[in-house]
Length: 372
Image (cartoon, rainbow, N blue to C red; front, side):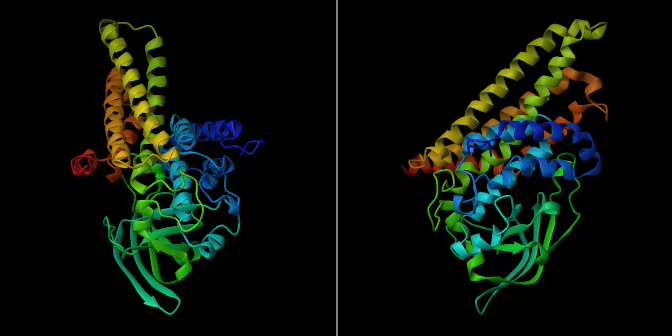
């Protein structure tokens, strides 16, 4: 938080961007974002972005968070992914009843929350005062650094009022190293496991309330935005940042005088560079509209469905732009030591996330449009 109480603190964000970029290659090689990077993201205030003010959170917007996440993503997409989830998981925590919120944030708003709704073999058994929860959850990004986890009782389905989300403290869960993908190596999206943990009733809420944006207490428009109106933005902002990083890198590549076969192709490379830069700007405009729609609370008449649609289209545009830039760097960009191949891998891996698939978003948008 800056000196005047607003967020973001530009100096702290710049520091996080510097650390993330400097340690990105090592993080990619090791499969783990550095502790220094996690501490810089926390110091920049990402975990507290949507935490209720009564627990020390800051009053910020989806637009401000998306811009800050994209800045981090210019240097390291994995670090930006974790930054975005640290922020938006805090928003999820705000759906807990008051006593549950107090317990989660007793040590302050920079408490690190992770989440997964991808449940596998879960048993949530009602007991006196709450539930006994056991099971595994896949793809829990940042679990290595988590203080709390938010996990669902079953795979959520729209309108299903029986699916609940449980807040589990660090001492009650473990994780297995199961994340080994072609890109986004350092997100540490491992499998979280819980064995017969007691979860009191006040540390649980209905998943469908989060889907609809129904909070028990006072909330800003950004906090109360329905899940799928901003879920795509959560995962698209790191990709936007990575694409910006690719433009910067290829710009440096093209600034070096070309000789031989590269000289012949230079003009076509300049055209490709310009088109990719324009495509990235266009995708950013779509993502900005999503954030603005949520921050204004304008989510009726199909606008939430439009936001989900726009996020998937923006990501398709970004992937195409990065593909175009990757080709410009030629064989050099494919070297294992070259930053461009890491960006290319990260963007493709991130774009495969379930929240960024066009087909379900398109069906949701069209059905809403036709029903009106």
